[in-house]
Image 1 (cartoon, rainbow, N blue to C red):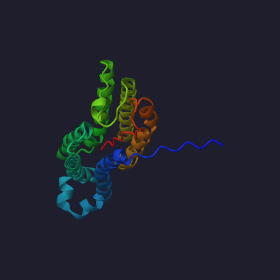
Image 2 (image 1 turned 60 degrees about the horizontal axis):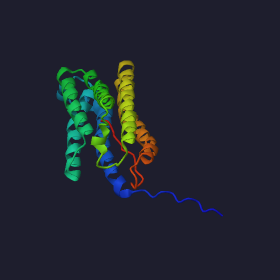
Image 3 (image 1 turned 30 degrees about the horizontal axis):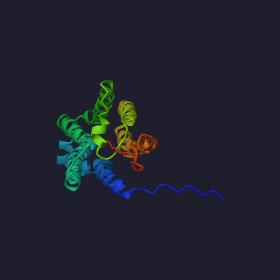
Image 4 (image 1 turned 60 degrees about the vertical axis):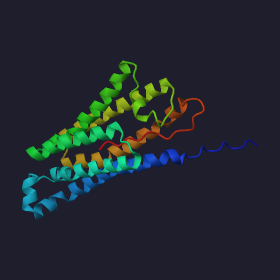
Length: 223
């Protein structure tokens, strides 16, 4: 009788840092969701806050979100002594567009931020391929050892995925309420990104350099 092939063991040393990073990236989103959900009651109870944030719960939530996001990146740097470029760009975008939303009392300025950031990521990754540069290799090259063809395919997939997220964000903020947009940003983008990351496992293993162990997928949570 043929023995059933053993299931590959999970490499916890490789998975644990990603889980910690994902937790740090997800935490500000949860805070953002709670602040938006409770924002109307908080603003109603405080005339001063209501005036500061133009009576809009989303702008109040944005003001709460920005320092929490900065804190999560600071904690990530303290633990790992490095922060990936994507969370840094996301923080810069949040500070710029969040600050403009607060200053002008216009929540749409913050809602358009994911469109711009995801388009920037997508165009940068796909544009790099035109010059035969797999830019994702510079982000995950110290974690994954892939053949060049693998890096090109992984970069292409992530570039297209970021552009898809940008299109979805445009459709949502232009056609639906701010609460629906917040719900998707917190509870939609994260599962989609995790599922997409998992879908890349076969590619990571197919193009792994000779002798490299099985990989877990890179997980990027856009904030």
